[in-house]
Length: 291
Image 1: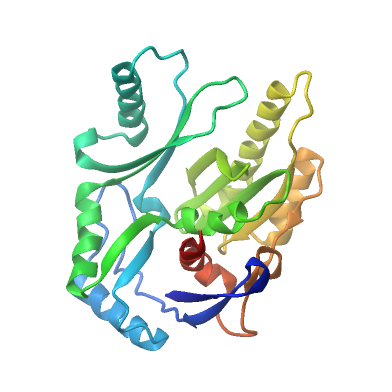
Image 2: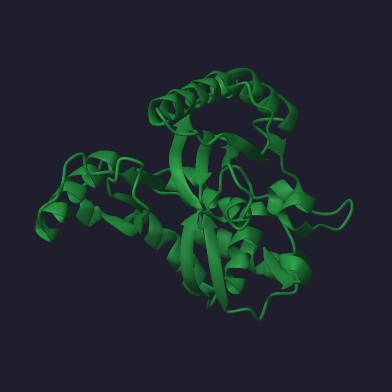
């Protein structure tokens, strides 16, 4: 739980913050199955956390859900669309295939992205099952909270990259118990997004494969023009050390990446208190207040 304080030069400091380790059996993040084993226990834990953070009276919240609870797609129609109804039909077909469930069972947030280099339209879609979302919303409602924004964890973490106006592509690598999510951003918009469910000992190989896909895509797109290069890397979570992630990226792409830390992204953290990994998603969502 985080409340930020805006500072000079577009920087932020923690005004209030607290974290809590929940029992492993309390939440089982997943897209297909129920997530919360005991809603009253989770509500009690969140209430205690709000007391610890000094935010008990706070009623308006933005929430980052566990990564495995949601699915995110980048949709690109392969051919020219001649009507709005045709576009909706194509996007609905792609979303139903990508989410793996009937659309009437999913709560979907969709936004239009910038066109790709071939001039094709692109859309970003985030989905969560209605039944799963209802679980979390019932807990928040029991606390009297109004959750105006509910997003996957990586969206909050990505805020630290897209707020930065530096040139070059930027990569977010965020790990969780079920695997990791990697997202490449260009001009503050997602270019590539992959959520990989895998065992801990498979993470490095899967990350290597994703970087190869990025490299091959860059080579295909760069004929006759100067290709963008991956310049910045933000690593969140215990699945990858910053050093090892940087080594894999440098070996694969032949580029030295700037590995970002809190000072690089404009976040002032108290020494020896909360780690950046613990609050990156929540604090990232909080920056939306200044957008």
